[in-house]
Picture 1 (cartoon, rainbow, N blue to C red):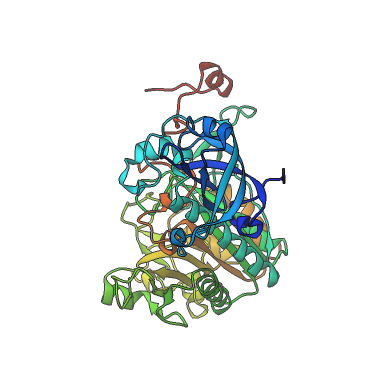
Picture 2 (tube, one colour):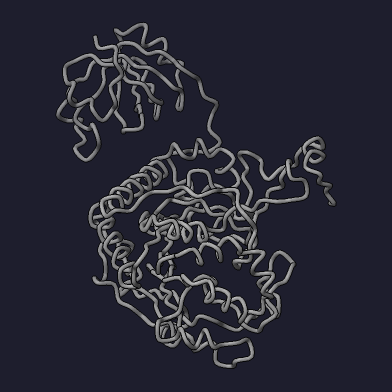
Length: 483
């Protein structure tokens, strides 16, 4: 008898032999003299049966229930011809159970994991997320997510990218969204911010001569959530030195095509190369800058990628003067703000107009940025630009938006010093990795492709967070809470 565990996916290779498997009871069917089980582990499922003469196994099996964790000793037998299920994994074998050991009992689950748990209330699913994740659909989603991550790593590493982690504790700077902030105990009254993106770090990596960087970055933004947003999300982040728009878009397009062709061959890309739609045309034709250009919107396996390009650099600041200054100190006083982020560069032919511009100009929205978004089935799944690699150009952007020079120097001294140190031309892109996974897996929102997401209101029912902290912790941090 083999005492080493055999994964369920490998049982066919042990036909006629005795094996040990370990996993969960997926289904139990007690027919009196015969007790049937479906067992599962991370590799799949197999049917097992306790025959009447297996007295000890019968005694254990009669008390065992679904979701109990067990160790099973059995013999791999071919199924009778009439019982073969050719369309199922291990449909032509079954496990004759000779002995069974209970490793852990289980309370009755809060919901049936064999049903479509999308019909279960979100609050309950996320409270018992570790049970929800046992279901076949979420197992597939999370494992496929890992496969794509591994494919991306291999692809980018093969073309000289280096995976580099950037800090989670950073500085609050006005980038367009509200920061999550973290108080410092050692430096009382001072705060870190959690990164909205690794934007500034990745540009400084270009200053550092890394030339080709990527990472799967956690990003945090304190903003209202919706189906394709979460308080924290994952970006596939890339930055390249000495690269043009074409270089960056070509790397992105080639990688996306390979992901679909190699990992989702049942899906069809509508058009290769991806069509490119100028922002002005997208707004006139589709009234949106992330158009859904699918020929057949009823086909769940049709993928219509497109690029939206030639964005205006500036747009009218709908929030009014100071609207983008989230830290309440020296916010922009101009009627203009950026459309994407302040670090983008312009098209080469528009650079002189940027450098000659000021906040009083009426036609700043005619300056075209070297920005590009990648859109899939009506979702923006990525965006990037060739950057301003000169400090004077970055200063000019903030000047146009009405930021005092001293405020820019205070918030972005690190960036300005880096750009002045000899920074090469560079650019990049960030994919909304959760959104991409959501579309590839035909899911309605990104919570279905994240292992431990928050609710639509940004709460974690399982960990019961956000939560209060003790008075001792508040005192250590020098914080008082006004409710």
